[in-house]
Structure formats: structure tokens, C-alpha cells
Image (cartoon, rainbow, N blue to C red):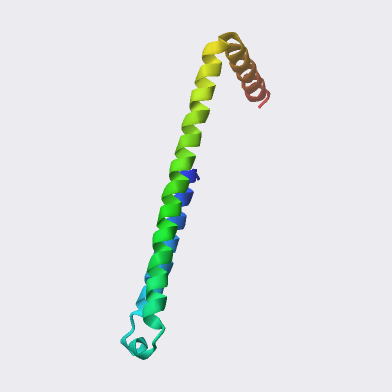
Length: 101
């Protein structure tokens, strides 16, 4: 599972939980309780904060992945023979393992 899939799943779970809480808190029976309006507002504020955090986390993960890809690209261009040697070694290892089967 990728980071973005994990974030999406977590966000969907959080949205469902909040939806369930909102459904519970929107009950007309609770309107007579003075703190319900405050609790509803805190729930909305918390959800907004969680959404913003999820977006920031996804953006940070994307930036880190892009930075890693750029670093790998720079290394491959700076050290092409090392990369080719490593690829050859991995290929030989995979070939050896497959040949033993």
C-alpha cells in the first residue's frame, strides 16, 4: 500500500467517524443540552485541522518522493558505470536464483 493510499484510507475512515458523530450530535433530542453547540463546533474545527494535516502530510510525502527521485537521477547521471554495474549485479543475482529453481 502506498503512502497516498494509506492517507486516503485514513482520511476516509476519519470522515466516516466524523459523519457518525455528526449524526449522533445532530439529534434533536440533544438540542436541549447547552454544550452540544460547542461540541459540534469543536468537532468541525477538529475535522478541518485533520483535513489540513492530511493534505500537508500528502504534500510532504510527494515532495520527499520527488526529491529522492531527483537525487537518484543525479547519481545515475554522475556515476553511470556504478549504476550499470549495480544493475548487472542484480540481474546476475536474479538470473542465478531463477536458474536454481
